[in-house]
Image 1 (cartoon, rainbow, N blue to C red):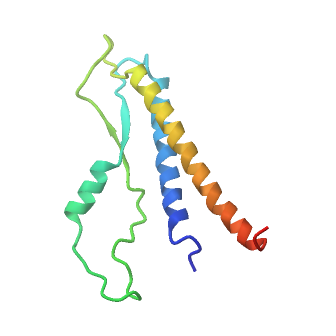
Image 2: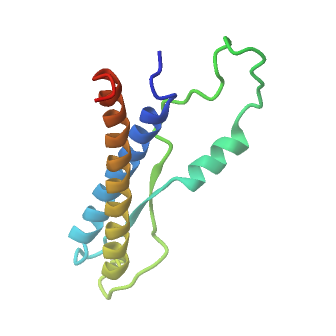
Image 3: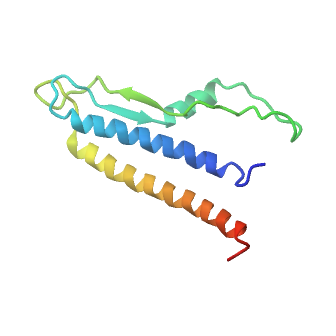
Length: 131
């Protein structure tokens, strides 16, 4: 029985994405002065496009059939940009971009936490009988 119709699982995957993105951004910021370090990025759109292009088209003809789109993979990947250099030491970390990305990601993460808290608050209200 799925109480939220898959919403909590989607929020969990989104929280995993935001957490990984925060780790990568923090790593980039920590290595801003490391000679030869190349900035990394967490990407989702490329993975989605690849999955759509390489997926087997299938139709679910009955609601009791197993769904074809069940995919336990995280849906994102980490890429490294080796084509640019911003600093004299071969490093390509742009601290202004990283700080902006970090702020955006923190807002995104907090909105996900607020949404999942709302889901559990609704469940708690139902369990208590509307009080």
